[in-house]
Length: 267
Image 1 (cartoon, one colour):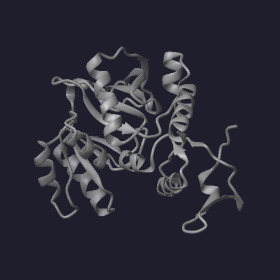
Image 2 (cartoon, one colour):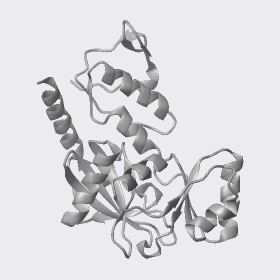
Image 3 (tube, one colour):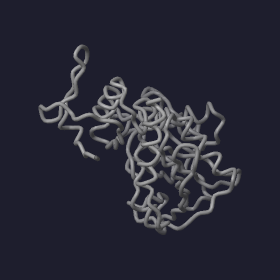
């Protein structure tokens, strides 16, 4: 039996007894958990997943893995430590002058990203140094953390979404942004198409997901003159676009994987 539970209708008690309630009632027995994390409720949902993990409930992705994936800086730090190729990235405190941060990345054009956000929200392209400094100043004034990344000219609004389950890439699609749009997200009007990964690209995608600590992930890579670079690892990747593009049932693959994980943990 599958139940859909709104995490924002729950509450939990830490200690003894350790209980999780949904609308004031104890949750039925749960064997496995498929968490979906939104932007607004992320902190609470991750705390809830951690509480359920503490009760020895198998989660598709762990709370810790999702915490890393939810923060673009922490994700990039983990990938870099694992020697996975990423775009040149700069992060600094709010006290560092904007022009100094910009000089470190090599000047405009430059990609500016807030540390959380999805579907292209919080990702900006500054075409000039003055435009970049204006954006940075606004972010700093509002205490919004951000990173600067080199702009990969040769990608031309194109990236690759790899869907990883366990040790395999079960699907991959190419996404091409609208003319004049550097973001390729389908929610931004990007056009998807089937993409055939090389063995090396498959290896990179699986390694990226494992490095961040995810069993199921959407790994986004961007082509460059020096090879594929990983730009993001998503802990709650969308299914509709890639399922429709490839005409496959990824949702069932996820369920099958979780069931196998539950059986393995029960041994």
